[in-house]
Length: 222
Image (cartoon, rainbow, N blue to C red; front, side):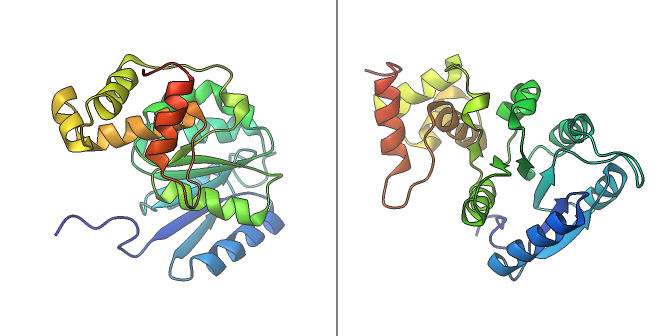
């Protein structure tokens, strides 16, 4: 048997938000959809750093938060906390709740290289969509809104993966051997490519087939 996944073991979520009504609403919604999950909260950067020591499986965070109790909530404070989280927790699944996701453009390289799921849930989306973004993050998917995808940026290793998968028909295991990287890295490449192409899970549709179609439309493969 392999190592337990996030879905196989007792999960813990950390919700970071200084606005009590929003915090309570988010926790209530998550508890309804994930009744077996332990949920802890933080209202400041200081509290968040303390809670992160318990190694949660998923973080749901607002960007506008204060450093300590009594401070004014600021988005640059949240961005800096997120930068630290990405650096010190490479496999942590993250959902960012924000009305201004474009501020995350400055973290794009760190988000791209992150091994855990990473999704952005704009404050304007419905509860159903927010829960979907949480599910995506737990499944290791990367989702960024159009504001962060100003133009298609494709890395050489992504092109190599697409050719090995769709022109040579190799499995992820064989691709990893061919590229001399781990299978986790290959899976990470897939989520990055799919986010760049705007391809996300859709019930009834095959994600790899959709990726192949979009890659051909963009001229990335023949």
